Image (tube, rainbow, N blue to C red; front, side):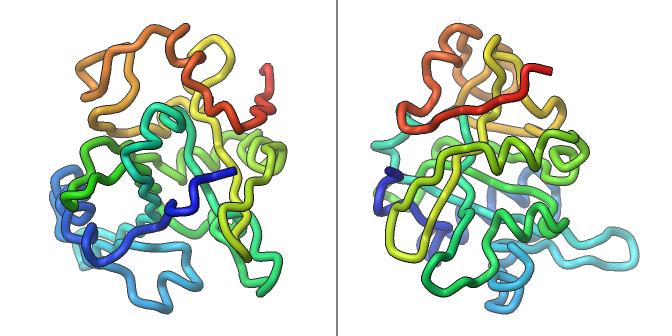
Length: 202
């Protein structure tokens, strides 16, 4: 079961996530409006202009105490059994959202570890939909069912090559990408204990 304090973010962390995104994209970001959040699978937005299109980013933050338990997957809401409202998974599979930032928050309002995932690149992989539906459902709270999307295959290679575009303080065999230098065996060993990873072999 996912931790009960897992959440998509709030105003305490908005400025920190906006800073991270602005640093990567070299553009200012703002918190999404209620309409963008509910219907477009978006938590942060860089508004478009004549020179550049808008960028829509979904987000999920977890408490740092879960950092060593869930470092190699993205948690995505997959069901709303009580309300029946459209979920993050449905929005993403339907083409909503451009990126997903997944990270860990501390008690000081910082996000010391995070990964930025390109949803458009991930959707280009034919097995993206299969993998998302194949994972075991977790229920962190009423009307919130979630699934772990694994980021690595069994040999430690990326499941969606090119989709992880940036990270800080997380897993990488290549330390130039900003994370902890881990071997393939270590990455595999850090798979979430509660997730049943059904990953295609090809």
